[in-house]
Length: 325
Image (cartoon, rainbow, N blue to C red; front, side, top):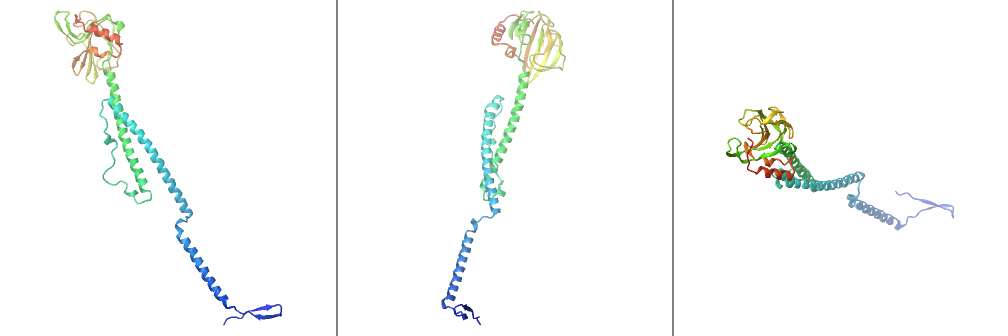
C-alpha cells in the first residue's frame, strides 16, 4: 500500500493531501532510460578508446622502446663509419703493404664473407622491431669477422716487415774498406790476368788496395762462420753467414778482430788488411755468395757510396787488368 503524502498549506493553516500527477511517473521513467543510455554510451566510448589510453607503466615502456630504437640507429651509424674505416685499411693492406712485402692480397670474398647455414638470429624473430635488431646484429657479426681477418693480416704484415728489416740488415750492402782508406780499387769481378802465372782467368771477387793494418768492416749483419787460414790461397780470411742465402768473404788479412761463431753487425770492425796467402801486395780480396754461388760484389755497395762514387768504382771494376791474387 503506497503511502499518502501531505503538505502544509499556510493559507488554510491545514495539511492537504498531495495529489500525484499522471505525467510525472512517465517522466521519471523516461529520465531513467535516458540516463541509462547515456551511461552506456559513455562506457562504449571508453571501451573503444581503451587501446589509446596509456597507463604510467605503458608510457614508461614506450619511452624505453623509443630510446632503444634511437640507440640502434646510432649504433648502425657508428658501424657504417667503422665499415668505411675498415674498408680503407683493407685497401691499403692489399694494394700497399702486401705489394711492398710481396705477399698475396686477401680476396674480397674472404674479407666480406657472411654466415651461411643455420639461422643464427631465430631467437630474435617475432618482436615488433625484429627486422631492425636482426639487421644490426648481422652487420655487427660481419664487421667483427672482418676486423678479425684484418687483424690477422696486419699481424702477418708486421711479421713480414720484421723479416724484411732483418733481410735488409743482413744483405752485404757496404764497401768493406772505407774510401778514405783506399789506395785504389785494384781489380774487379771478371776475367783478369793472374799475377803469378800471367794467364787469363776468372777473378771471383774485388780487390781493394790499402796499407797493411787498414780496418776491414762487416758488410752486413750475420755470424762469423770462419776465421782461419785453412783455405788455399786466401791466407787469413773471414767468412760471414748473413742468412737468407748470403755469405761474404774477406781474404789476405793481416789479423782478425772476431772469432768463429761471433755475431756481428754491418759496419763492425772484423779485421785488418794484410797480404797473407796467395797475394802479391797488401790488399783485401772481397767476395759475395748467394745460395753458394759467387756473384759480383759491385751490386752490393748501395749502403755507403754516392751515385758518383759508385759510377767511378764501376768504371774501374770493368777494366780488365791484373789482379793482386
